[in-house]
Image (cartoon, rainbow, N blue to C red; front, side, top):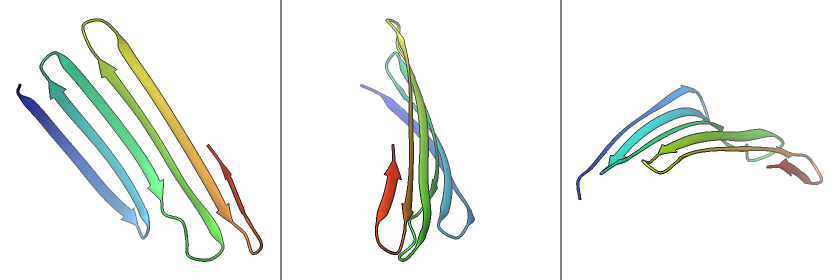
Length: 80
């Protein structure tokens, strides 16, 4: 089986990254994008948002996965 993958990651600011990827295997194409800000050691916000699409001859599937977290003095609040 042959496979092709191409990916790109860009770091516009400290602790922040943007990435995109493409994968081709036989008759399947997959596309992904992601934005992420790493969690701070102390208080502060972090997040991740990823989305993808997979195309096959039978179907096309799209997925979205958001995540956000806040580190407070006395606890952590997160949503996904």
